[in-house]
Image (cartoon, rainbow, N blue to C red; front, side, top):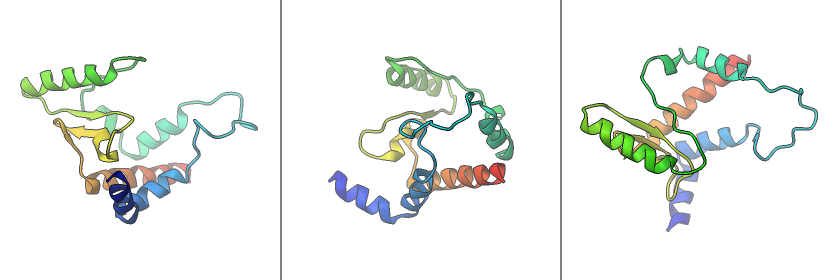
Length: 130
């Protein structure tokens, strides 16, 4: 069943955007040979600037650590939603579908909005690098 979903996604617009994303350097798996001694956050700052500083338009909670992030985000999300707040959660890895990594008000994002967001970020990255 997962293979059918993966096959369908591979032919979709989201699949095309994901292939574009996959073509970028994989900092977790790639070799760092020949890299400058220091890696800075400046490329990220440049990308956020091209995107219009989206991190400044909403309140956020950053949950980090080695254990319990998913449970903590679920608990916080539920509490905030019950309090009338809109929520968004970005998590990794996914279990069944890539779209479950991004949840808006507790619901997985659709393929089209995810493709839109990734495409905008990739276009902004290209503009920032130019």
